[in-house]
Length: 362
Image 1: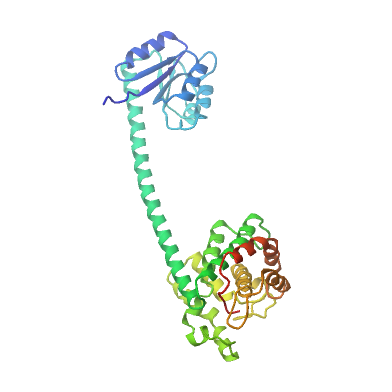
Image 2 (image 1 turned 90 degrees about the vertical axis):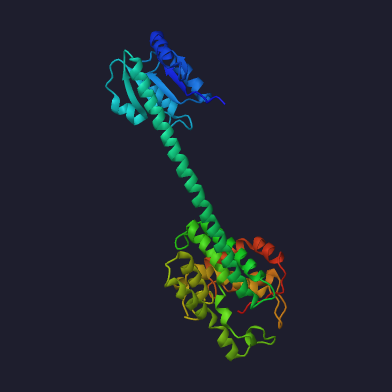
């Protein structure tokens, strides 16, 4: 198959110069000669080109004006432009605009051929290097995506193992994550002082919310699966699960400083703290409680209220929302409660879309 010949656009309002260029290059290249800069630009807007020979002193526009217009076309940044000029003092400005070389008139055919060949070889080399970079980047991106997918699978396995110890299915974490996502996305959309999130931090909160009850993995079956209401002694064991979850994640944080692990630890350890300081395990108050834990607290309690337990029926959405509202400024962060209320319909849709037989410890 015949190889495509490089296309060279020559722009010069002197017909004799164009004739010399065309005759010199016709054996190796496809030459497109233009005596008008405007006509050449119209051609270049719709046709590929490998190199441009450009006269600086065009009658209707100078070479700078032509080059500025040409560089506005997408995908032209790597196309070499060589100036043809009799006398020229604007080399620096031309180079800043993307010119790669200057050939003085009268044009010497051999010099012209050598300069063009050099620039086309350089461009081919750059394209080859760029392809190598793109190929390596694609392979790296695929490897990173595979690792990310693997991390997601491992995270979901761990989260569901935790949830299945406490519930009939793993749906509690799906619902809770859905409620958390609603609040987090609203904080991203409408940031305010003390509640500003980056996209990365927001994603960490949403994903690590799945691990909020990680500390329940080590709790006795006799407590987790007890059908009667817990005794005070048994409930004191339950109250240790935030401590255990925090310690579990602290162990891994000592091995790797990671924002996701830090967020997961804050949630696991503090999602039972209360805005008024009456929560556990540390009795933190107000904004002493990490923001991710304050977000998960609302989602977790709402799901507990609307879920059925062996000793209680599930409460409807309206009652659950009223209880969340009544907890504003006491149990919950008032600003987050307001967001939760504003998205009551979305919360209800998530709650209704999942079987309501699961339960969580308060």
